Length: 275
Image 1 (spheres, helix red, strand yellow):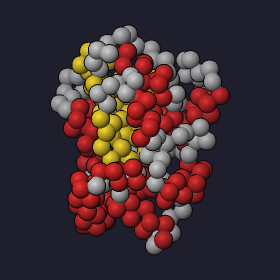
Image 2: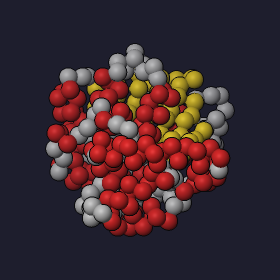
Image 3: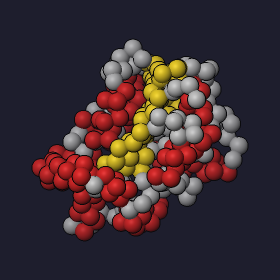
């Protein structure tokens, strides 16, 4: 398989090889497109999508597209989607998923730190769980470069502060790359060097009880089961419980926003403005 253009660091090689192996194990029937944004537990994706909406007719870059669920969803909503990933195997899976759903997405292999697009090419950029896999500031500078003036970016990223989540990451080491580093609030300050208007909102505080339930009561091994995927697949089963916990999250985070540091994920929104 041809390496991604610009694949010139050990970190990039590790990331590509890991995601190539993962892609080869995937079954298209297990890739959930609509559910990834519309399940009750898909609150971060839905929030980010709404922040970029309306997407119809816009040229959107899905950065670190993985298996292409996001790319296909945006295309189904009328966007002109270009999807890139460091893994050629993931790109192949994404193309087959788009074909299955009857939508057009332009997939290609590339690295975030060196995007093969002209300046000001996209109306918006979306990325789910990609920034903590790349060299943060070089990648952000590329994202800013390819955005049109006034263009928007939305990213969903895991946070590093919660010790329970850190324990989960250790137990799920086989499902993670050794070169990934979840972000912290100090990283958000660094990101404002490139996007001064960066804004973020956190998700999953008490709702993280579902992870505990998976581990204690369902005995789902974090090394074998990707919990972030299971919460989407099993959303109907836990909808009532999840909605009650989310209401508690909303109330507590509204009154005590500093507890956002203990959440699982953050949605980061930015706009390309003159520096």
